[in-house]
Image (cartoon, rainbow, N blue to C red; front, side):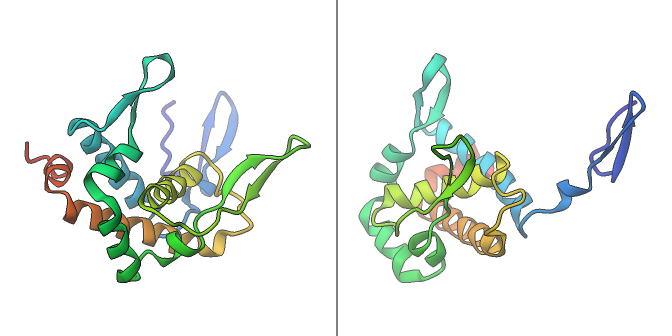
Length: 170
């Protein structure tokens, strides 16, 4: 039997699986996943990738931030006011504490473009890697996703080459 994740529950091998919790996520999370997918594709295509462990390709976020965005872009984002949550109270980092339990660690206010890009990635990572399921701080997740999408819009408006790849006009 094929699993349809749009259904509330599916029976496989006689065991019912309830998929209803997959619908509980911040507003805009679906769009953020799709936009991040294209953004990362575009960054790799314009040369902002590096070799990670096991020869895996990963985005070189800091090099992109420094070479293509820089301090003027960071200052413009601060002045615009539409990414204040990412700047002032960035997403927390999920950690394993000293007793081996999952916990959340506060992250200080963002002070440069590399840290702002780190906030963007952490919004995506916290959602995608399950950190925001059962999250005690879930009330601000909608704001974090909205800020992340605003930042991506600004990046794409700022960088023509990246926008070209993102839009598929190559």
